[in-house]
Image 1: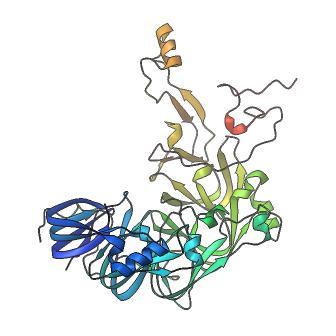
Image 2: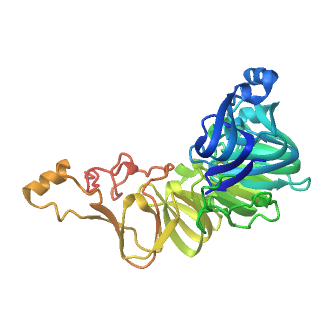
Length: 212
Length: 269
């Protein structure tokens, strides 16, 4: 079984013993031992996944790393966050997903307006199964728990990923004052309700909401 | 398993989570710190009432919080007591309600500071948020803002902030702000550029300059805040000042630095 650990906060080290992980294409920075790097088409989800990704535009080029030894991954000096999944589903932007164990299944799901508000497409990547995944974020992500009593609102530009049984809806604070030049700059938020964890990064991507 | 690398030295990097452990700390609405840092890059505000934020720096919140742009409306009185320069008011947002609110700015280091009947002048781009006990004013120094009163404010910096006491000379790019002491003056260290050749060198740069000939000099009692990097953060508009005789700088654009090193405007007649 592949063993994920952090070497510092910006390099992921994965110990492999004749098993495989899926990682973002080109994210390997070094390795020891004997490894093969095979590019997977369509995010490693077979023909159906390939078609889905083509249609949805949630693009992800992935390689399969297999062998013995330790492989090091990094991406633009972004902070790396480890997530352990025990059968639940992780929703994450393809641009934030660095590496997953080969046992985890990846797919795409519809996000609706939330995706559009983040400046991404209308679709997001899902990771499902049991095992570890590594996410990248601009600055170390803060993990926030959502309970039925304490719903959470997140700026679309700071959202990275979420797990658990969460309903999300789009909350808009746009009113006539936005257009009268008195915008609050926090016009759009995603509201999470239910039970689960949300990962936010201490930095905001440029989003549609951020510019209004 | 081949293992060519030892563990990082103690104190290096983030906490190392042993495999299979719970992973990173999970915060919820009750365990988030009240008016303190969650990590060096994220600050958690315990909101009960109002706070002022720079636009777009809220990343998440629990509870019932509304965000209002500044302008005419129910917050008029609050704004009137906390803002004394209407021109830069458009950059600010009032957060109103109850809950925990997380602030962050492009993964820069974030710190909070308390003022007790104090005053502090800070570079406009570094100030993220402040509580309404403080009044925000435009500093006489272009590009800087002054906070006066009692309350808490949150500032971002490129690298950790260092506090030093005057007398001190600091690099202009490393300066974040200063508290309680008089505004700085310029200091030029051109003593090695002597004679005709030195003059030519100073004007043309031929022969090389160290790049550290110009500093800000602080005197008096107080604190000077420096960031541990010479990369400036983008400033926000501090607004312009209506020109009248006696204003430092020139009539066209205070931030432009007036005319020439003396910064003299035209004569009033």
